[in-house]
Image: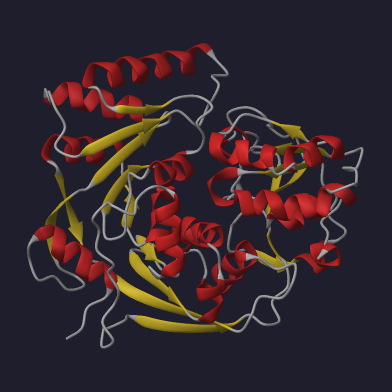
Length: 417
């Protein structure tokens, strides 16, 4: 019987022949924490008396960067002191969002088994890794032993046919799929993507889709490891590192298979207060917005900034809208500067903040007011996500966010493409 990608990776890391439903202890290739979760990791490591790590580890200061409070500053100092004591890699303030800087840094490769103390660790499925989020204590155990236990998930296959229309992007695609399959449609399942639309997507679009698979309930997800993946890895200086290109067998057994033709897909919106509460943008043009946020581990990459810049170029943000832009990493920020995108954003009236998660997670840099509607490129819109449970968050693509910032209400961006 053929195997899925999840079955192959977990089998390799356990040294056993595993199938969906099996339990196994598996070797972990890489693990990380961020400033919202690392404090507990540090405490557990000290309680366990660990003197050295059994797997590669890094920490990222991104959720509250730079620090907005005394309490957060204490956590940041704790992380810096710990990183120095254990001589482990630390991405400090300004480096960017963990799910951008970690793949940029080359810490994750195809076929890896990755644990992150962050729910959107599934992002690295874009480069063919089995990556999943765990609690801080589970992650500390992986550092102490180099291993952790796993239940091999069943796999759902999603085939995306057709061609994305102009002005429609990967974010629209994944919002559409989540709306169709619902937020629990892939609970504790792996998801494999294929089809001509996926083949034609750039790496930034693949990262966007992989990032949001946890909003479908998925344990992990996988994009094809193809020429685009290999070219991206080469550009990151990974061409000489050894890794395995793992693909599913032709006779792999899937729990379910879904096919979508997106040739007529329109820009999509996720409405408050659930990601699977979706609608076409054209149906929501009466919704007035007070804030537009572009960034996050979902859509703060260079292709996202390019799409927004195309809409904003030589235009002005509506006077009643606050537009906030956070590049996903220092590297992305520098590239945006080089390409003149930041110049476009500032002239349009947007505010550029340091690379990080602050506005998305609601710690600083853009907490909305009571009753305010926000359109955001983030991955979640439940109550309080951006720091105020009395606000309303609408999720959309970078192009839709930019178009809405110009108009002052939710708008269809296709007229700009």
